[in-house]
Length: 16
Picture (cartoon, rainbow, N blue to C red):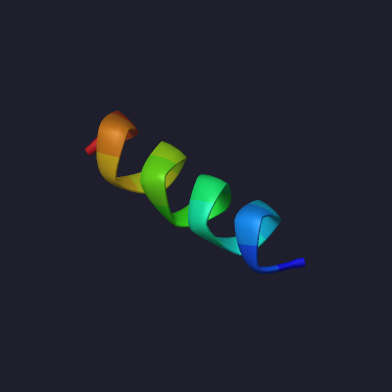
């Protein structure tokens, strides 16, 4: 659960 959330946030930061 936590890993998925961190990945999502990381992906967002990577895009921006």
